Length: 110
Image (tube, rainbow, N blue to C red):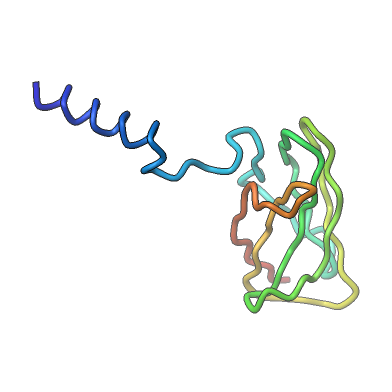
């Protein structure tokens, strides 16, 4: 009985807007990534429910590089930048309006 009440309470909160849902359940940056050069990172899988942008940012928010993604499954998405970079960066997937759909940390070292 307690389990049913807890489940009902969670469902009520979720439907009433009490629990934040992700901006998009279909837009994701794959868990794996590769570093083909000192000037880029490549994500084998990026799924987008609408056209958008995949950007790589420094911790301070400075954009290193960005590339467009198309709706659906995008394979081998490479983001490049002009200088050799090492460290921990954020990959951010946004829609055309700039809404963040997914993000993850990547560690780049060579």
